[in-house]
Amino acid sequence: KIHNPQFRRHLHTITMASASVLFINTARRSIAHALRSPTIMSSSSTIGSSIRLMSTYYTPAHEYCKVDGNVATIGITDFAQAALGDIVFVDLPEPDDDFEAKESFGSVESVKAASDVYAPISGKVLEVNEALTDDPGMVNTNAEDSAWFIKLEVGDESELGELMSADQYKEHCEKEAH
Image (cartoon, rainbow, N blue to C red; front, side, top):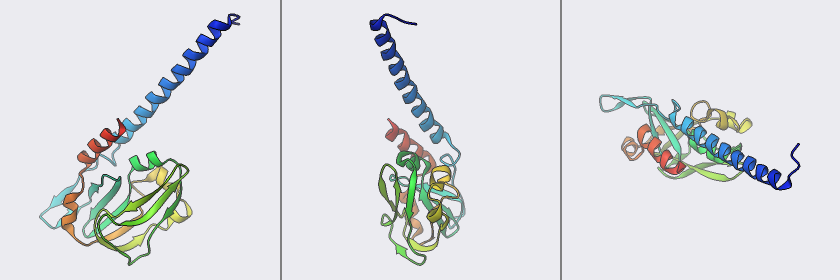
């Protein structure tokens, strides 16, 4: 038992400072882990000039766009869901809705904030992920896989050239994290 009150206050200050450093280091490791995850490091490949095999593109606003043939699967990235926190609601458009590139097609709400979600490219909505209506928290556990938001028919393939590659997006996230 420590009887010196001045020493106890000093020890408490050291303990709180250590906890803060531990929290900051844990957060940095989590961000670094997310940046090294296979979903962010996925590559894009092309055969010829018009056939694409699961090419993945990213926006500065943290939407991803996985293109397979003429269909783009769109959602928010793992980086975005981590920044938002616990997702509690996802608002999605209707099938057959048309969107221009950079136009808001829905929103996502968390316990911290609400954010619009933008179409990375122009196109017509082919399908929406109805599972997110019942379980929006899927976005927190599987943002770049089963928690996709919409599938779009690619309207203008040239717009894909305006998006970031996996390496460019990784660099973008590293800059935002610092």
